[in-house]
Length: 125
Image: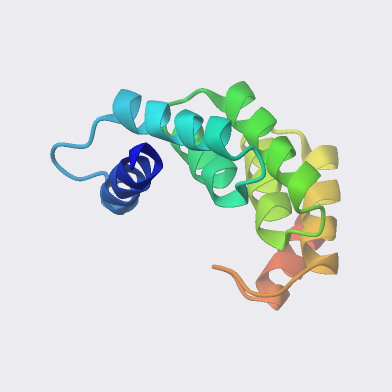
């Protein structure tokens, strides 16, 4: 029953997290994501959602660690490489950003940008 309640809470906070709506409690959401990871360390979605939350709350180094944990579980995730590329681009580390974007292209399945847009981004770096 406890895990069922936890997943219900995660769903609630995940929906609010997408909107950053009124009543969103980042600390509580972070706690739920961390509990989900403790319950199942191979939960890629929990690592990804925690990383997104940490990035949103300006805990960039912690976000990178969570994205890297997601890569251990899913080493061909274009989404993770894309997110890491965005972080490194924001940090002005063009070399790392380009490396991550190239990996995102290699493992491309889908995403918020088209593959061509991502390739153009790599060329600009």
